[in-house]
Amino acid sequence: MMSYGYKPELSEGAVKCPIFQTSTFVFQSAEEGKAFFEIAYGKRAQLPNEELGLIYSRINNPDLEILENRLCLWDQADDCAVFESGMSAISTVLLEFLKPGDLLVHSNPVYGGTDHFIHHFLPKIGVHTLGFQAGEDQEAIEARIQESPYADRLAMIYVETPANPTNDIIDIECCRKIADHLKDQNEHVYVAVDNTYMGPLWQHPLQWGADLVIYSATKYIGGHSDVIAGAVLGNKELMTRVKTLRTFLGNMAGPWTGWLLMRSLETLKIRMEQQQANAIEVAHFLKDHPKVASVHYLGLIPKESPDFELFQKQYEGPGAMLSFMIKGGEEEAFRFLNALKLIKLAVSLGSTESLAEHPKTMTHAGMEEEQLEAFGISDSLIRLSVGVEYAQDIIYDINNALDQV
Ligand SMILES: Cc1ncc(COP(=O)(O)O)c(C=O)c1O
Image: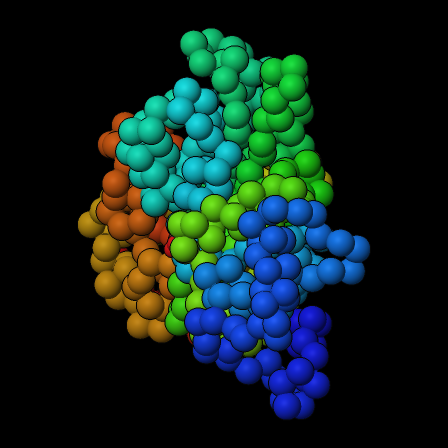
């Protein structure tokens, strides 16, 4: 994460990759400019060892390319595209792989912004949508899809696992099986996974058969609550499509965002490991607190639960995101949130400082009342993103705030 893909000799020997704050790049000759555009616009295949030269920062930029190459390592992907937000990464994937008449099957719940795009934008362009919930097995999901009048147009299964904010988990390998089982003779059914909650460390969806993995890089990848960004990874063929649409929507990240994310990647692993170690302690403290009704955390899945096997298979750690139900309702939840001193009352997640929020009235406020209820996003649910602070300080703050409820 510190040197991969960067050649100091191309940048006056600078140890760190500079910020290439430039909109356009000089070609050495007209012939070279022509060759670069032939590749960028897909007019001919790239020759062996031929690289796409630098053209224009909406198409490519060294800060983005080096960052993308480094991100590929975590998920063992062929290619990556970085965006100016997680939502632009998500919306670009949905727009590229869905067309009018298609059916999108998605897990529930998903991040509020994704939910809005799926339910309020996609129907406007004639895309049909169908949700399923964690806990439904292959047979149940397939039966649901087959009951839909649009079953023969199934084009994508979109999954968020663990789900924000409930930490429900979904079997990606099972989604791949469903996609392959129900695909029309020639059409591939894409499986896309939002892996934001697990960062690139604790879950690798491509390994379980996903075609595309998506991140809000605002979260663990950025990690300092100071940048908004997104990323998509997958094989060469699919990423060429994603990058082409990104070029024409113009929603790529800028060089400054790319540089910030590269700086963040240097500490990604140690940050995330510390956050996870803290979250394990926080979860165990909450579990035994008399004012807490239940804790949703991957590290607390009971061994006898069917989810335990899935957790062990699909995850490399329980992560640092948890949510819990406080005894009472909105009043008690708000009293707790207002009493926190160290933990910041703010949306977003995955950064160095601990953050707490109330999903029902904040991140997921746009969802219908009955949906919120069905997915367990209740008045008493509080979401915690555990940071890198000293664990006992976080617990002290939580304990103190609970005392005031
Ligand atoms: C799971 C998940 N996916 C996607 C997003 C959207 O990312 P961004 O805010 O970077 O656009 C978020 C934002 O909170 C999220 O939590």
